[in-house]
Image (cartoon, rainbow, N blue to C red; front, side):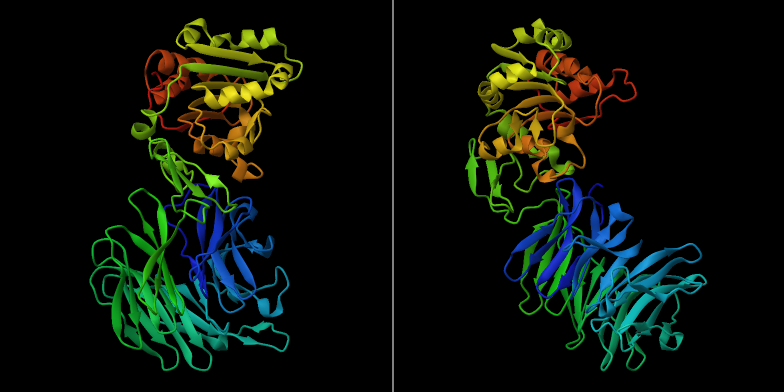
Length: 553
């Protein structure tokens, strides 16, 4: 699952914010304490999105478990069916489910009488019902409902029996019927004081924000600008929304007590998906680099601060030291170890691979020692030296070797085992490395692994042609140690990773001939190789790093 263009809105509880991060190749949920800046990532296999948090659950929708609601803290699936758009109240969680007859219904996961999978229908009429929200006291649920051609807002009061089971009755249901469409409701309040419901409304030809007070049935128009205002959220007397009055999406808030409207975030970048509680407003801002940044606003002080970037798993993004002409950056990860990208300090992302290796800064500075090593371990202990040497002649040619001042060839399991230390040292100092082996997620054939790179972040293997299939797996176990990630972070200017099994050296000769001999870019060499006829079950090759680099000295 790639990073989505639009993330689900973050979830808030107390000082804690929960949001999606692209964490080593899949979507996980991260939490940050906004008061003291501590953080934690719930690293779960597969993709999690739409975070929600209640008194007894920290959860998300688990894409790899049929979109069921999932407790990311205790690793439990907590609903029997798939759902979407979950929202948490005090203890309970409401969400929408697919309906063959009406498209969507509303259900509730009841933590007042909690048994895993114990869900109840809140709305399952003949109409399409979706986008639910639940009050902080779990006594009212609101949603949008399609009546004929228009969307209206519905809400229902919940009564619980002596065992904590909800009693859902149509006599407690109310419909807010207005002209035009009303969508994306949010609710706040209590059963004793009444509830306030906000929603977006297009009765005036554009989307505006309205508020409905259940205590007296009154409606107030919150925004009047002719541009669109959408996605309102409410907590107590504070309403926030996404606003387009300035020509791009901004975040605004309105205080019901003072009647004052305040711009919260109005930069030139899009600011979207706000959430609010009694103290904090949080939202995403899309930076010019394509990343989504999470921001917070302290309602009590008016102070705004950057919380995190949603592409990474770091808790500390401060630059800790510089190396290689003051352009080799490092930062500290969750586990306390150093991270060592050579361009950005934020981590490895698909959208950032080119920026990850700073071509004009780093490539011109590194030592092009014109040394190449071919490590051909083979696929079995039965492979002999002469067989592997002959197999390698298609790319390890005399013409190629003549371009280098020093070349080193080694083959077979046995020879590598006997020369282990020597091969490791050459790998860390040679300009070009060609590797052929089964490999695994954390290791090039039992030799160079992620743990070596943890300790030797100062070393910069420059170009790696890798025929070790598992090193670039999409969903490895322990993906934080994936060798592809660590090779790039250690300074590899180009890395070719195979992701399947087959005769995987078809690209090597084209890349070496085009780029190292012909002085073209590494990307052009890669594309030349892709022109070759490919058979079923051929490797899927991924070229990581900067494709614009010309590797020839």
